[in-house]
Length: 216
Image 1: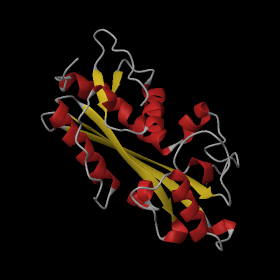
Image 2: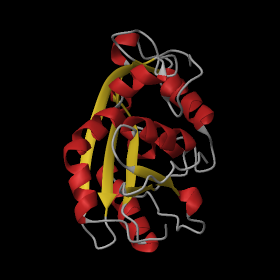
Image 3: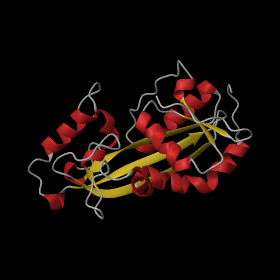
Image 4: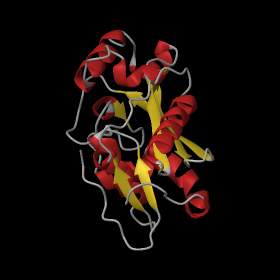
């Protein structure tokens, strides 16, 4: 996994509860201008696995954040995000990461998605990425923010950047997939960027009121 950011003296620390390298790197980029030191789960071996079996992104994000915060005694950020496709009545939704099966990868998820949309015309391939970010303190206090990004599903994967469904998620303004966009541009448009933007006004105050209590 991507290494944690260096712990800067007197800067509040925040544990990011994910094993997804791309997601951790993206969150680091989105929050890099704030006086916060992000830590990753690689610094906390033996972290419990939290089932993501709720019907809503917010519930999954809160479950991950609160469970890891209690276990680590560290203020923790978790997000749950996914793709909602209108022609599939909102699927894959909260099942986005395991759409093709529990042990399948992103390529298999994309393959299944495109197979289901094979006969759907471009105008009806509308979709959105949705993200909910939850922050939990060991004592139980929480902070939640969400963001969405509208787009369309491409006919074939394009691009080498990003992760997950990025190769088939078309940005309507540029006509490029998220996997074709430069990281800096994606980080201005994405659902995760919008959730982080909503989180920012309250984040530093939350960290000051609920400081890191875990291992350094």
